[in-house]
Length: 417
Image (spheres, rainbow, N blue to C red):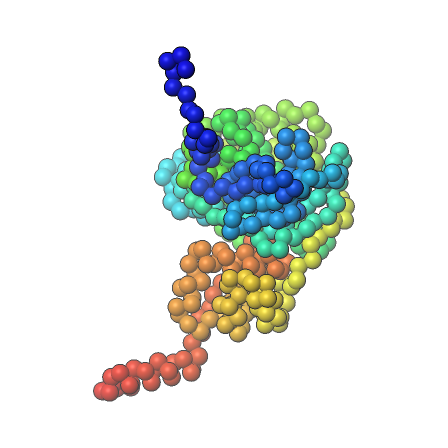
């Protein structure tokens, strides 16, 4: 055509390669009524947006997902005309693999390196249009989780900020969630400014605190970190850009909150109007210089909330362990068979200890991916507290010792006891 080469094939080769995502696991959303493809997305986005029961909007049209098939990586949806939308709920756990560079900025130590991110979606909430009223929570039949290695910048939060923020934490009446969490407000501000600075979108980078942040035990001394990480396997350089521009990001975050015209906090500056804007600003300024905490703190009364009733209470697992193992076996959990071999567990505050009688099992459980999967099963099926710990205690029984001794004696006739 006019001396130019034009592709005449039926396929679209460029469509096989995403310009925004390098995740090889791709999920399709299909309109069940006409079998046409609505859209395609990466795995973690699919877990958040097209899980069972999710309301997904595409091209101004609402769809309700009726089934997400993990084997075929396909979700099926039908047209939806309801007056609500859905938001996923879950948790993010980050483990530092190794740091590659670090620096000191004012009062904080900043580092950059490789991390492992474990994201899990186990519920969603229904929110009404216009007034965003919470219509209730719905738990997924099985948790959707994905862990991947990526790059992150992490900031050590000053001890005085951690101490004050922890004192402000409040448990809900049911004891299942923590409220008045100003660590979340701190993450919200830093993430928004980081997105503006690096010219990224919400799906490009994430920001979260280490699990140690919400530990309310006064004797808990672990350091608390804020992680700003790439939401792509291997990383795309956004987190490293955050590391290079951290001074600008912190300064702009202080200006953003301090310059907002709202009186005590809004969705534009700190994300949650129930949080105290002054306390978030104080926390940001303490990244630069130590300042005494303000005395007048806003305390908001929370309205009663609807909570998902979990099948088992965490504090009762010691007495109900056999029933718990039977329940997860009936649900087809992959680790149910192993957990059923454990005859004794112990509960101490927020710590669950599995008592094992075989050294091999101990090494197997402590392998990072296996331990993470076991934690996810406990969190999904019980009302486990935020940041609960899973520990192992090895106890060899007298029968085990006798069997080993007998085996050695048979093998070595001259064995001297």
